[in-house]
Amino acid sequence: MFERHAQLLLDLHDIWRRQGVLPMLRATLHRLRLAQRWLTRDGGERRLTNMLHLAELLQQASSGVDGEQALLRWLEQAVAGRAGAADEQELRLESEAELVRVVTIHKSKGLEYPVVCVPFATHFRSADDDEQEPADGAGEAVVDADADALRLREDLRLLYVALTRARHALWVGAAALRGKGGSCLLGRSA
Image (cartoon, rainbow, N blue to C red; front, side, top):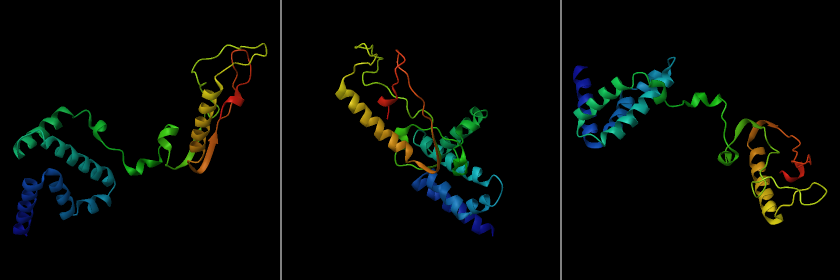
């Protein structure tokens, strides 16, 4: 039994020297079946994620230090210096996917969510980004028709992206928009 563990440690040390600290730590997780054991206990998923994150941090740090002992000193100093910032270093777990995520429509393209809320579906910016003064007596603003048509086309494309991200439920906020003169601008939004 002792010889088997001693040989395992020698093999892991050899992996560290030849391939680096990250492959060695992954081999340790695999050969000692740590992931399987941790995942059967409460908090095991967090423990495994923290271990993998630590392995990545050590791999990055190993490129800036010279040798195994220097990396161990770096780890000791990092632990001492970051005792209060442990939460900042933890990775988000896949099991936390049930939390609310706020993303832009641009970033949501190609993704799917169980529930989607589009609270400002009628909001838009005019093509020139400025509120236009009415040019005629009817209170309608005059804008460059081509620029506004391009803006509307892009707004429609983005609205389509937003509306097609929902898997189970979709909530859309629509409000009547008013210009400076009280004129309704809803017709200019997607």
